[in-house]
Amino acid sequence: MVTTLRIHKFLPSTKVEGPGTRACLQVQGCPIHCKGCAVPFTWAENGGISVEVEALAERVMKGPQVEGITFLGGEPFAQAAALAELGRLLKQEGLSIMTFTGYQYEELQQGGDPDVLALLAVTDLLIDGPFQQELLDTSRPWIGSRNQRYHFLTERYRHLEERLQHIPNRLEVRLAPDGRVAVNGLAEVEQLEALLRDLL
Image 1 (cartoon, rainbow, N blue to C red):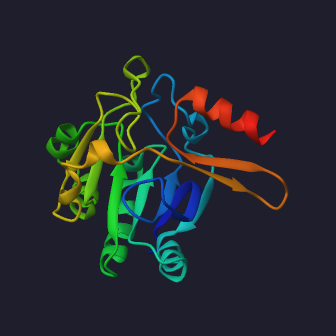
Image 2 (cartoon, rainbow, N blue to C red):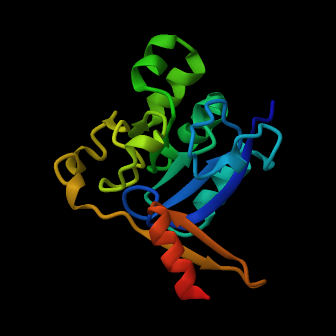
């Protein structure tokens, strides 16, 4: 049986979506709908495109050299089985897995869903918790609000735990051949507006 994922976007290489140089997979579909979400266009389950997990794993391995992949959303745990399979394939090749979720780690653990537990099992670094607009905080890397937490589920990135306050958030700006501008990474609205003003 072919396993597929519904995705919004795939980046073969990025330096702003987790430790080191990584591939990044933004999945499509989110049941949480956080107020103030920066990517509400990823909420619809029928948006984006469908890709085969094995083909995506091959694309990662044949692409630019990366140390791992980041799963973000949308909501990765809404497609836990397929992402767990992708994670297993990539970990066999020595890559690391970083996963974002709007759920809390404890509820994922205690829910007992085998697919959810399988995705947790392949995840090295988990960032949990819903984005809360009233707790906006971009002072920590990769995190949007103060309630969100880092969980080092393996030793792979444990060495970063005491250094997080020294890791800055960054943005990447990509210019497409047709003139479209795409920005990824984490920044406050004022920073994005200033960046766009400078580009115009």
